[in-house]
Image (cartoon, rainbow, N blue to C red; front, side, top):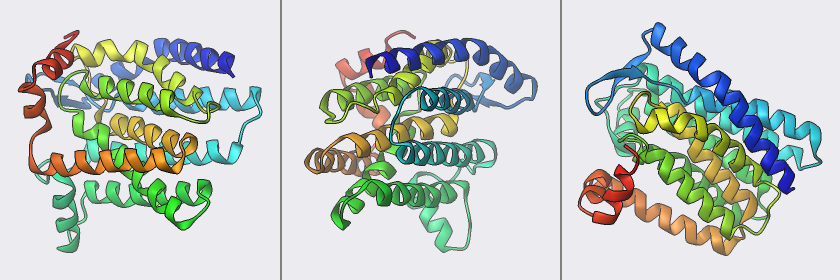
Amino acid sequence: MSYINILSFIISVIISYIGTPMIWSMLYKSKTLGSNYRDEEIPICMGLLFIFVQIINIGIVLLLVQINIKYIISYLFAFTLIGLTGLLDDLIGDKNIKGFKGHIKAFFKGNLTTGGIKAGIGFFISLFISIIISKGMIEIVVNTLIIALFTNLINLFDLRPGRAVKVFVLLSIILLITSNIKEYNFLFYSIYGILVIYFPLDLKAKSMMGDVGSNVLGITLGVFCGFTHNLIAKSIYLLLLIIIHILAEKVSLSNIIENNKVLKFIDNLGR
């Protein structure tokens, strides 16, 4: 399967090389812009690139290798749907409502927010995939929570140029190392090929991936973990994810990074 990883990477690089400037230009000309942390107007929703390239790439892979097609189709379904909810949030989302608690409170007050839609769809997708891949009720619960929390995780870090991509790459490498099953590694290698082309734009604050991008990166981490790790390993990841999300509700992750010399150095690297 190693040749599939390499092929997936190369295909993504080629398609992304062609598609990145076209999507960037399309968003810029249509005034699909947002203010970055420097208050500069730049294209948002560049995560659309991830959806187009990943779907095309995996479609090609499915034609070349024998693999569990039910798992891959469920991933593509989840990948696309969570990407679309992220796009909705990018385009018409209420930026005054912050955090998971804020959107849930708004929902129970009768106010539907794009963040609330994202949370609901995210849970449905996570449960849907978990039912397909799990062997018992405990595993369904663990997989559902892992996929849902991983999906939201990258979004928590997407506050400075390049940070979300760095977090994704680090976590994906850790997941590759700790996985028991290697046949789904191409899911990450395909993303790596996209990031080779896209990352410089994000790092230099020339574009933003938006929720559409952070959502699909996050769900790829979660689904890969669900596909490839045993229950013990997934339980450890789940515990860490819960701790990070509780921490994010109470303190600013950006402040933690800024106040730690090592994390700050990594965060600023390449800018």
